[in-house]
Image (cartoon, rainbow, N blue to C red; front, side, top):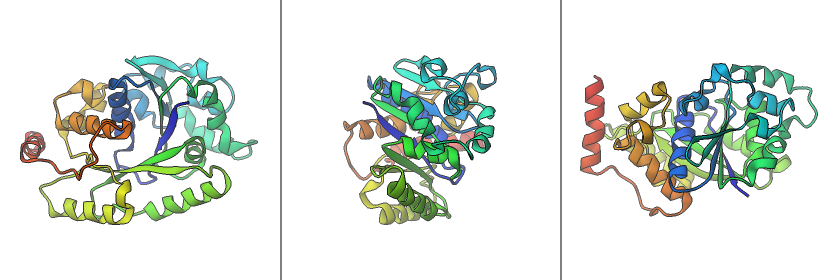
Length: 276
């Protein structure tokens, strides 16, 4: 059975959807069967792999509200070895409709159960909140990846997320674990980035991935073209780092303390200068 991992942080702008899309594609490149479940009403993971979210006949909304089964919603081979359960703005209404529903926290888990065995990895892109949709994602998952931006308020809200995880372990999903913590949007030209990295590593210890995602213009451009970074610009530093992360998660990457070397730092800087 595939491992189900939620990409989760209730704080917006941490690179959650960017990670869900690019990590999924990078792992699929390694020959693994991967499924993305877009559980964020913004539907950015859906558009990020080139699917028009405004033209969907069925989505994860129908799945969670038992109006469709997983095989009816599934879009196969959006990229080689990568399938998608898409989402659009209709999912916004599910938060309200689920309030009085029976077994409201386990809807997503039950809905995807029939197809999970077809995949090596299932990544759920959860909303930037701790509402019922995120709760469904966490209950359905074996573990979570927490993306944290390298900024001054990096740990803001993380304690609330950890408290929520504790409650879910107690009552709904005892085996839920932290798969890892991913540092994103690192700018090695500032002392702040190094300070934040040290702070996060001090808090989460060995749960922090060696791969650190830098600020990268090509990475931020890719979603507007409906492409993951490995397809949009496979030679960019953003693509390289997500491939490193994929190798680390699959277990073929070295567990080493990660720092951009001089050549990589020059590439990241060059991207930023071209944009300014």
